[in-house]
Length: 189
Image 1 (cartoon, rainbow, N blue to C red):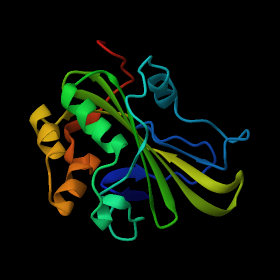
Image 2: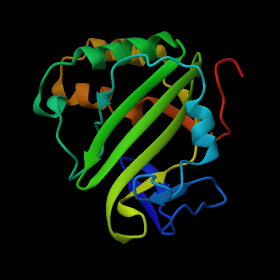
Image 3: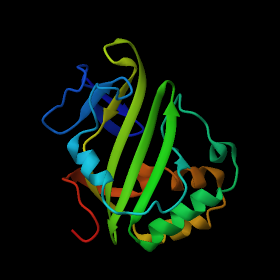
Image 4: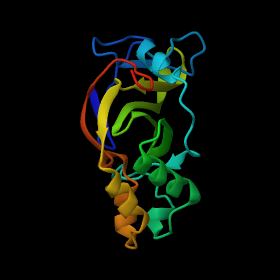
């Protein structure tokens, strides 16, 4: 089954610890002997990239998603300003985006590995009654290499006055272009 949450396609595999040929894995439970993230996700996570900013809220997830401060017209938080500054600079580092759509929780990790280039990974968690490994199913999408939007987009977003414009500026799908499956990559590789 393929599920689209916030624009990212995730292949849901029902077997505990099963993998599909593209590297997407679903694991029931919280990891207690029931499998681990796919090797590619683990290797990408091992790259020596600093966390560029505190984690930010997930915008643009769609209907049923948790509304966050920008959805209610608030100004950018200091973490959101940090992320826009970081993405406009093209400096290597990780950006973490957390959100929820109904019962589905999502963590997006964007690893900036070169100017204008980032590696995207998505992990989702959802309730799972009767799963072999507990009451949570974890789902990982494949690693994707993506072009970052032009630095000017992020710089312009810092000056965005319109509340809907600020939400659009903080929607991860608007930051990325031409995403394609990739293997793990660290800075300069």
